[in-house]
Image (cartoon, rainbow, N blue to C red; front, side, top):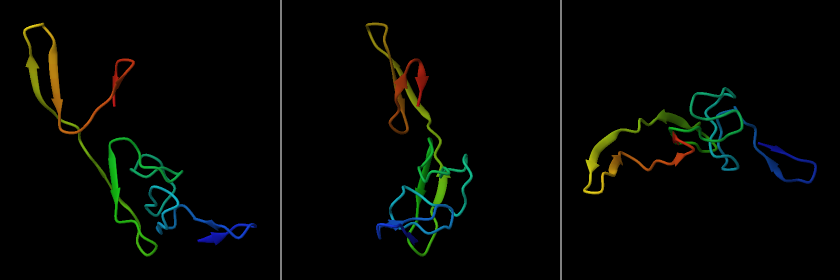
Length: 92
C-alpha cells in the first residue's frame, strides 16, 4: 500500500494484497485469468480470499443450460445455472 500526495491510500495492483480498494488482486497484472490488470473481476469468474495478507484466488464458473421448456405460445423458456443477460443477441 502506498500513500498519495494528499495522504490518501493507494493500493498497488499485482502485489497479491487486497486492501479492498479494488475488486480483486491475484498477485499479477495479467488480463484473462479472472482478475484484470485494473483490479476488476472478469466475466465468468469469481474471486475470493483476497485480504491485506493474502491474494485473491479466481475461479472460472461455467454457466450451464439446465432446462429448456417450450410453452403453449411457442415460446421457449431457458433455465441456467446462474443469472444471465441477453443483450444485442449476446448471452453474458
